[in-house]
Length: 305
Image 1 (cartoon, helix red, strand yellow):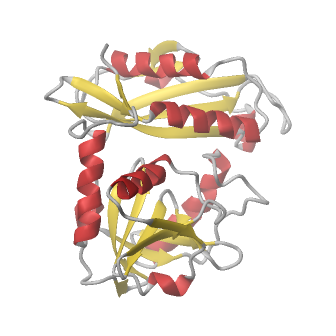
Image 2 (cartoon, one colour):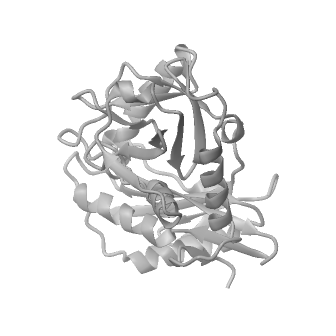
């Protein structure tokens, strides 16, 4: 699609992406009154089909976020889903793409405005970074993870991501690829945009949903893939020192998918290279999302109908 016009959907109307603009005085700009979803659609050349992965679950979480932030809208889940699918078709993706759905308070309201709510969806091709093969080097951030009693970390509230931005800047200055946040009580939470899994002595464990983490769709996918393979995954609070004793680790997120972690705070995990257990899960995930493995949960949505 390089050099081609790219389209956006604004409340269901298809328009040039450059024209999908938000007013500078909207509550979305003034007060970060917005939530979003980042999703992927995978190109399967054998089927000549674009497969949106877990679109219904992403839309459901977006509506959860709007509920928590007290957004008031008459737009239904079904209508928003139709708008997104129409956008993907209009952009004509014949390669794996990342699409973003933004719900925000439009107009020129104040800090307590509940509407009007507008929706913008955009999409663009997205490949994979070097970390997908080489693995991430994480560093525990000096910034703590935003707490549930202050902000809603379990949904993709735009304001939460300033916490992540500060962590990323801090990590880069310290020579790490990505930050890892602790909670206010010192337990392990997540990275700036993905959830963490650790493997030690054959046991898989991950911070639970009350550890100020996002209720991640990709995290859930990884857990269910592992359990389908007969592997028990324990969701619990995790101490910082447990990070240094893991033999393998990985992070999950729509953008990162399943990526190995090879070091934390400068300490290599295992051999310091992506391990076989993570590589196995990574391949299982790719086979599922790219349409080579059976879709027993109905997670893949064909875009071209």
